[in-house]
Image (cartoon, rainbow, N blue to C red; front, top):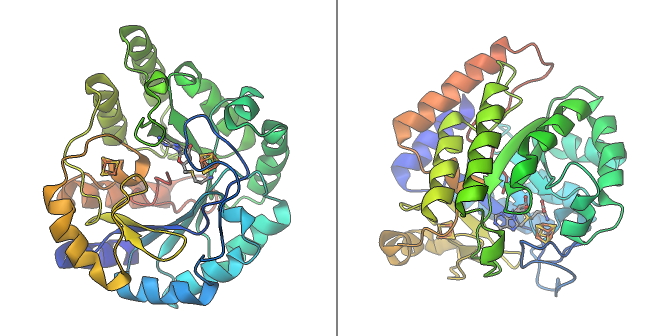
Length: 339
Ligand SMILES: C[S@@+](CC[C@H](N)C(=O)[O-])C[C@H]1O[C@@H](n2cnc3c(N)ncnc32)[C@H](O)[C@@H]1O
Ligand code: SF4
Ligand code: SF4
């Protein structure tokens, strides 16, 4: 309920609901769908204590800690502690490939204040290693995800970014989520990062597979909310792939990115950079004129809705979590995204 209260205040004040901190540009992988692969210059990264100023100024109710690969930072628990305020907000999601996750780090990060762990999984088997160019990644996940899930905190969500390469695997990845005792969230590929149109599932054949897979996924919903993506988000994802775009983006206003060196950007694929005190200027100069419709990533899809719809979905989900039979189930719909 505190998330909803803070979200309402931000909505009215024109501040972002969700802020994504890209805490490093470096990565352990070289994924086919992404432009972040490999090592980068980390010399200008924000220090852990500098993050406090960002959460105090922007007052987000949800924060994504992302990258690059955030687990490359040994001081990540300290970063998380500085993002978390004493009232428990913001709700913090860690978005990661888990290539460097261990049970010890999972427990330490929970203790530091991470509320939800979003683990990227593109395939239900070793094709994941090929797609991410990281040998052994799937075997590592098969070991560490169930071990962490066995603690019963119900705070792990598999993030599956739908591409032409894995569109037929959505339910097979969902099966893995069930087998490992975790949840699933879908997201949509954008060609804007790499310029690669081949990975966009827009042909009639691939769209037919997409609809079949999403119909089946929808039929597997139950009141435990293990399918974290809202039905409205799944519908809008279908439309995005069918039409090739999703207009009405509010990047910079409802959500924004803080780069590793501390600049504000409307999103991870628009490189207009502003200082921390310039969010209102970003809204005036970028958001007010933005016609870009080139992605429907989760951070967007969860915030494109009208205020009553967002509120309705969050309250409904909160109430159904209260009824949920799963231990510790307290994820919020606004927090569900993570890409
Ligand atoms: C950029 S990564 C950063 C965090 C971490 N390295 C990871 O892979 O989870 C965050 C999410 O973006 C997704 N992603 C990467 N490239 C994308 C693209 N072109 N379109 C949509 N999502 C993409 C990834 O699959 C991942 O779930
Ligand atoms: S999707 Fe994540 S793991 Fe893959 S290259 Fe991009 S940042 Fe790295
Ligand atoms: S649609 Fe919005 S979030 Fe997506 S790339 Fe364009 S400006 Fe960024």
